[in-house]
Amino acid sequence: MLPGSLLVELLLILVGVALLYAGAELLVAGARDLALAVGLKASTVGVTVVAFATTAPELFVSLLGAVTVSTDIGLGAIVGSNIANIGLVLGVSALIRPLDVSDTVFRRDVPFMVLAPLLLVGLGWDGRIGLVDGVVLLGTLVVFTVAVLRRVQENQSAITDSERDEMPDAKGRDVAIVVAGIAALVLGSRWLIDGSESLLAAAGFSDIFIGLTVLALGTSLPELAASVVAAVRGEAEFSVGNVVGSNIYNILAVIGIVAVVTPIGVAPSVRGFEFPALLAFTAVVVGIMGYSERITRVDGAVLTVGYGVFVYLLLP
Image: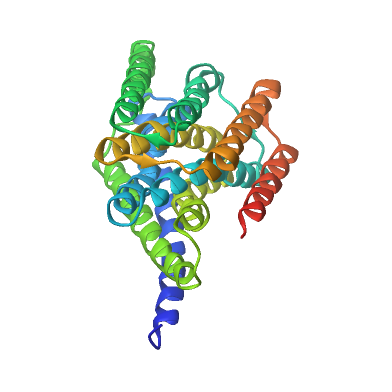
């Protein structure tokens, strides 16, 4: 390692974290104001705009990693990111403030959050996710997108003239804030990942381990930052919708696109541990949502500890 390179990597990590926080503040504030201006519910914006925006790092890292390094990077980043979104993002957000679960999100979006990992495990159980599998995932994404667009249309048609008159006007400044927030999140994630990945790779860790831990955590930091800021501000619907939407996009969009570009190999160890862990975390959080329509601080502690155990079991 060249003299000073360690300092550069640590600096990248610190600057990346600062950009993530700033980007999350901008994204949540801008998206909330736009939602009010066009009459959308916060939960819908969380599942769509915020979730898609915070999925950008996963798409970038997974696609670039699969093409230039190995598909282990991409698959590990997505599986690990979805587990981190549930265990860490929702867990920490609920510890800050209990999260109410929108009935609309639970009935219309959570089923897709359950379907996505089931499809991933089913399609990848033969050890390979190829072109046809990618098309199946992208086709399911189209169905989800159509369902969301119909909901948006229903929300718009339900707005009365008097309610529309009271709604604030959409401002170009709000759009600029959202764009700036997305840019900061993507750039911050990239710098954080670069610094962390270099340190682990130099220490001799495998691609799949780096994908499941550092890259998964790094690409989940936009979700964590956005959800934590939303929880602190009392915008719980953003936090839950963000995670639900991100977990859907991660598998259906990111894995779907990567599989179309290049086949993804699925190692026996992934089918034996990471896939079951993904299904288990998904089942637990859906059970929590269905039981009380709220993720309490106790639930948040359980999810956070569960994520800690998952990372510990990954250690070589």
